[in-house]
Length: 109
Image (cartoon, rainbow, N blue to C red; front, side):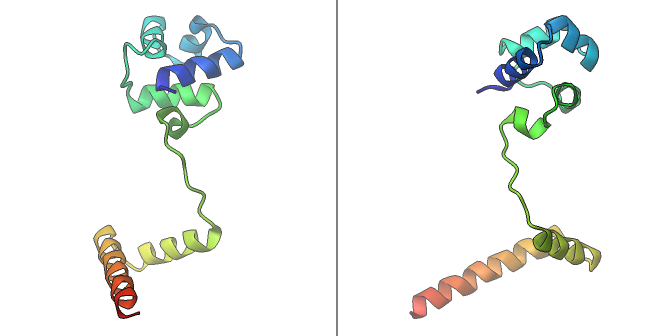
């Protein structure tokens, strides 16, 4: 389902007209119509955010991205790593190292 189809479906679930949603989200009716019909397939994050807020959903849902739930322990470990100065590059290096280590372990078995 495209971004526009999701917006239209959620709008209809909430029983909003295009005029109502455009007013609530501060988006022009014609622009909202273009999004829903797929003419405008790449709306800005600002517009998507305002629409998502008024449709009780997330920008990630509208864009088709699934958020992977992270348990509290993992979130705490990531927070601790960030507080201790681990950069994204450091973390990526560590992941690569662990993949390499895992491959070597499998090769030896």
